[in-house]
Each structure stands twice: as structure tokens, then as C-alpha cells.
Length: 437
Figure 1 (cartoon, one colour):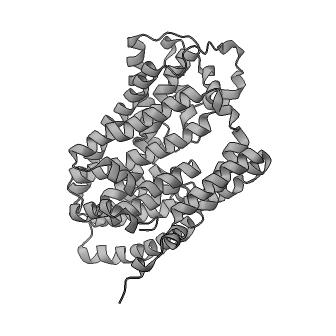
Figure 2: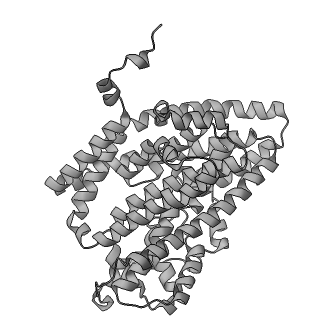
């Protein structure tokens, strides 16, 4: 019997590849946004409904993956081991990301020579970002935000941290049961998971429409013109993110005996969807599926990926530290070496405090400037970033996805939770692993 895959013509392969349609969606969206901005803005519901539908599925997928994965671990000691190693990895790598933002800002000076005057800015434009809980970033604040008030709202609002908390509690309780009772509890959970993942597969078929809608809205609403004034900042942000992914994470992958370029090729379809939709949520569940299919333990994937989306937002960290350096340069405020160290230390704390907060980039940036009066950078200066923040959020979303995927792989290899033969095969044959792999 001949292999049907081998019979597929190159043209048929192309038109049945979802990534091809996503790229078409991006190109079409950009064209509509430029030629008819009103139509571009009007197409926003396409991306809104897609993300709403995804949010309904994200909570159950995370919950079911964590519970079935952790109950499947040999012991709770394994859970502690994965959690401890993930914590160390997140702290070290997210701090390196902050340092990368500071270094690139200081070396490439994207705000140099702009000579802006903060007295000309309208404070009301950033008011909603500055009225935040002063407790943000503290360990108590993070713990408080992790505990849900009821068991339903975390799923409705797709609060990954609270879903993670509930899943851990349920998984630990189930781990104390006998094997017979464990299997009886897991059977219905795995049945539900099977059909939730099927729904996800069908929903991802609409990602080209979501990509078109997101790009048309982005260009239609903010315009290509808003990019010109901040082109240097966007370029430095892009270079810093690429340096972080291919050099910093590349070195970490080298020690894990994995080629960073092969790994990025493996997750390229998820990266493309995140870039097109400006939202890392769109690839959270497909990424978890793909890593598990590639031989990484389900419990490790279920624990590390959702936790990483709360505590390991590497390119958001680059954005935060780079933005502070940019604002200081743009408004002619000199920063000493002591200031830079204090920015790094304060961001190490505040960058962890935006878990599940909408507009978190601006909130954390405003909160950090408020916590650093010694730098002399007024909070109102963040207003100049409002126009380009949407474009920078694409880089943040893509970089955060890459950082979390690498984090999951590295911690899993470190904890020996990877079938390396299966994983290496997956890296060498990425075409066999689709969005719904």
C-alpha cells in the first residue's frame, strides 16, 4: 500500500498547511489596514471572538494536563523536583532578560537625541495604568492572586495561575489515593481531555481569520505612521529579543545538548500564530500538546508552561528594562550605574507582580518608575510609549512563547523527564507535528 503522504504534490501540501493560510491572513490584514483603516478597525471582532473561544478551552486544558500528568508521576517528590528546578531556571533567566534590556538600551541608545519634555504630556492618558495596588510584585500579592474566590471564575476568566493552583491541589489529593482509585478518577478526566483537545484542533482552523483580523485592526487603528517616530526603539527591542532567543537561550540549549535553531523551527507554527494575533494565549494549549507529543513528560509540560506564563515572561522583562532606559534618554535624564542596578533589582520584584493583570506591561512600568523616585523619571513619561505598545506587544508575545518553550524543554531535560530519542526525532521531523499534534 503506497503512502498517501508521499503522493501529495507540493501545491497540495502548501494549501493544506495551516501556516500558509496564517501567512496569507497576515499579508491580507496588513493590506486592508493600510488601504482601508476603517475596515481594518471594524474587523476587530474576528480576533476578539477567537481569543474568547480559546480562553474557554485554555483553563480546562491546563487543569486536565496538570492533574493527569502529576497523578501519573511516580511520586510527589518528582513534583517537588520539577517545581524547584523550574523556580531556579525562571529566576536566573528572567534576570538575564532584564540585564539584556538594560545593556541594549545603554549600548544602542534608542532614545538619544529626542529631547522630549515631560511637562508637555497629558497625565490623564496614563491614569488608568498608574492607579494600581502598591502591593503589586510582593510575594503576598502573588500568593493572594493565585487563590481563587470560587472554583468556576478562574476557568471563565482564563486565569492560568488560579487554574494551576486548583489543579495542583486536586492532583496532590489524588496522588494519595490507591492506584485503583487513581485510575477510576483519571478515566473520566482523560475522556474529557480527549474531546477538549479535539475542539482545540477545530478552533485552530480559524487562526488564519484571527490573524487577518488582528493585523487589519492593528494597522488600521494605530497606522504605519505611529511606527516611524519610534522606529529606533522598535528596532532595538527586536534586536534585543533576537539576541536573547538565539544567543542567551542558545547557550542554555547548547548545555542541554539541543540545537536552538532546530528547536525554533520545531515551534515555528506556534510562533507564527502568536505573532499574527499579538497574543501568547493563542498558542498556549497547542504548544503544550506539541511538547508532550515530542516526548516531554505530561506532568512537566503541564506544570512548567502555565507557571512560566506567569513568572518567566522573558521578553516582557526586556521591554520593561529597555523602556526605562529609553525614557531616561528621550527626556534627557541621566542615569548612574547605581540607578541601573536599582532598576534591575526593583524590576526583579515588580516584573513578577503582573500575573493575570490586563495592560500589565504599562502597569508594571508605571509601578516601577513610581518605586524608583531616585532615577528622576516621572511616571507620566510612559505616555510616549502608548502609540507603539501594541507593536511591541507582538515581540513580547513571541519572545515569551519562545522563552517558555525553551524553559520547559531545559527543565524537563535537567529533571530527566524527556524521552530523548523521541524528542530528537521530533526536532529532525517538525513537519510531522502540526498545530494539533
